[in-house]
Image (cartoon, rainbow, N blue to C red; front, side, top):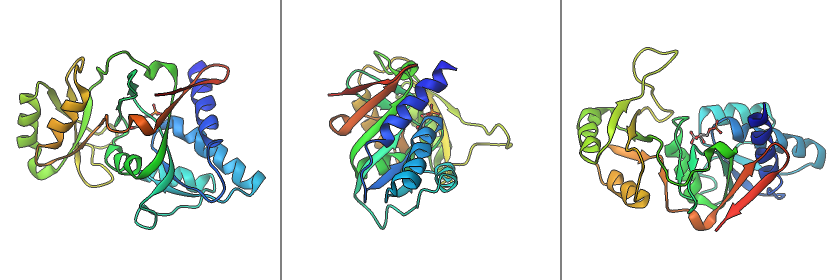
Length: 228
Ligand code: DER
């Protein structure tokens, strides 16, 4: 219950950063839902004029439900703000994302945004990134990429559907390989090494955005703002 309160406090606080006329990247996952809920309220109460670029079918469906007008990254290749969640955040504000299998579009949106608000509950804050790193993989190359990831030290596991037989298929038509590297000493270097594998289309390490990231850590009462 307190985790839900924490997520709500973080999401609501992020929504306060949105100004009239902004185009906002809308992340995927349960914490961002609260930011969308609050944005929907502000649109009704304040007549806030915003447009959202959703990072997944889930985000688009939920944004519509909250009455947030949608647009595309093509129409707005530069975004004012992105609001997204994370699975882990380290003290240098490097992230692991991708539990929701939306990391490829999330990284495109994060890259296009002038500032990024990451909304989390306290359980996401860690000293060292050590969660499995999701990698979006071209189905054509899944076996070859798995071997390359294992050579980098991972235990690569193809993500299976829960209410679908066979592998999870992302909104882009690709597979996800979850790579357990245990504690990651050099996340930035690992992100670059994975990016150099043909067929590894994107990974859940976000190490290049520390300067523009503000982390909003929701707590039972209120929230804590963390930035470099
Ligand atoms: O998949 C993602 O990257 C999501 O942002 C996820 O990591 C956070 O989801 P949550 O807010 O439901 O924990």
